[in-house]
Length: 84
Image 1 (tube, rainbow, N blue to C red):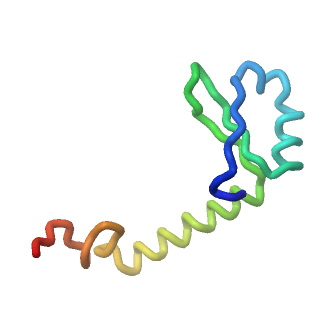
Image 2 (image 1 turned 90 degrees about the horizontal axis):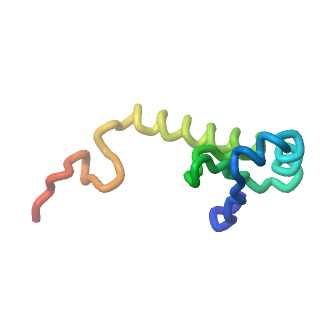
């Protein structure tokens, strides 16, 4: 899935009626399906390969943070209050 690819949204009541079809289409097209409940998108159905890719990325981030937990985005050597 590309980052600029939009998520197709659908009301939960409609997804409930066509869940099998929706799952097949997500798997076939590789396009995520956002499920809205009361106008808020709460859940996104993604193809298995995409989920596995995201899970691997999350694992890599955890391992990276365990190696050097003091250094993170937006900080300089772990210090957020750097003055110059």
